[in-house]
Length: 386
Image (cartoon, rainbow, N blue to C red; front, side):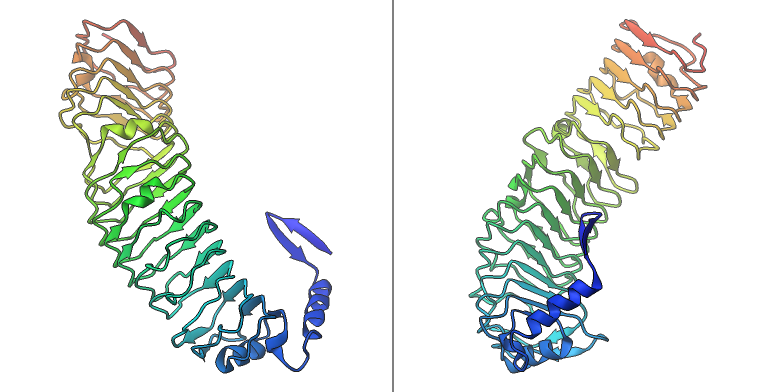
């Protein structure tokens, strides 16, 4: 009767009907005295007439067709045990003066509220989803120790993310396409339980966390942040981060601390203004599956090691003459690599050059003047060295 499939719980229709009948019998004539509300006429009555009571622990608004409901400002006042509020498709209009502090889950798409009631504490809130809402500020988010997920994607009036240091257990923060967002507080860079951070499409964002200490972070999306020009310094090893998207962003430079991203698999930076930090000493994008092209490098006098091994779609190595002190160049198993620029043959500090497994490589440096070279690997590469 109950199955678990792909992480979700499936219930047989008969069992669902039985459960709903039991709840209805709790108070056949007064929906405000039932523990759960889902039938749209009952929900509308409770929200417009403020007839809810402490009996209610869950509400789901799911109308037969999208429609407007004008909220009574006091509609939640007596629901002091409400834990779940889900709005599927209603346009809920009006001001509310109170939200129960017992709430654990809020899913309220296109919410018309500009802010949460000032008396809402949210101590028990676990999931807060208000995508495409009218919310303008989050000053009420002072102390939410149980919150793990916040989705404010598409909130076009939201301008600032305040101090979130008292939301220490958040794992998923989605701020994508908040087109008025200008500032994200530095505290976001210290949320060490954070796994996913999405700021894609925040076209007015100019201030992001200046430093990152996000040991649990796996994905970071900054693509289409056109006005964001700098990338944060990375203060600790962030080995969990494997996806970094900065395409079409205004980011001009990656700091030398990018070397702390030891688990990075995918870096999307096309159509960006990216240049590498002149103090960079090691550049590792091992196994980055999205890299297809490298632009000509600017002067990087301190760079001594470059590892692009396993970048299976990389087709060409550009002019490297402005990286004069490189000692270790690893291009092994770049299986789409066809051409390596002649400048590689004149890197007189180069000690190790690895082109093993570059099965499509046909053009290599035509002449070698590599006085310091100790090892050269060309096995499985279709080239001739002269």
